[in-house]
Length: 207
Image (cartoon, rainbow, N blue to C red; front, side):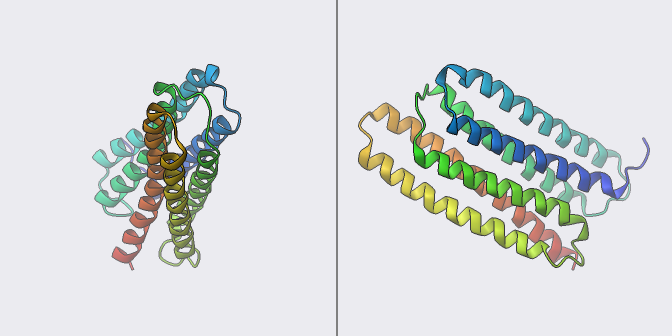
């Protein structure tokens, strides 16, 4: 197999981050225009995006198996790929839970958090675009901080949403269903922050 150029790895990350943006935007669209009769079709669309991200992840792992020299340590390259892939898994997980718990309407709090997840994914994509310049970038650290800030905001929204759910929820089954959905929404933001943490670690190792 021909040696992969260094740009292959970074381009792969950008492609995965772009898929995360697509997934987050689809999630927000599903919530804002919610139709329980269409949720299975929306889940199929989400799975197609997640499957495309899985393919990118496997392409990178295949390249690492045969690579002699890599632009960063293999473990870091693989960790970054896994971290990006997990973001897609968690976003898909939100829609899965809406589907299999048969949720019939979307709480306004969920729409607000979904927008935060989209913001985090967009910042994460910007971070991946900037990653090849990690040795001299003036904006990489700013993007990491931006993602951390968005995650903190999402965490506060999650706490408030859970409080509202348990104070105002009347149907125990609905409370249980939404508790799971809110948790996965918060996981999405956490996973974006984890990607930023991996970038921080890479920069420190290679400074």
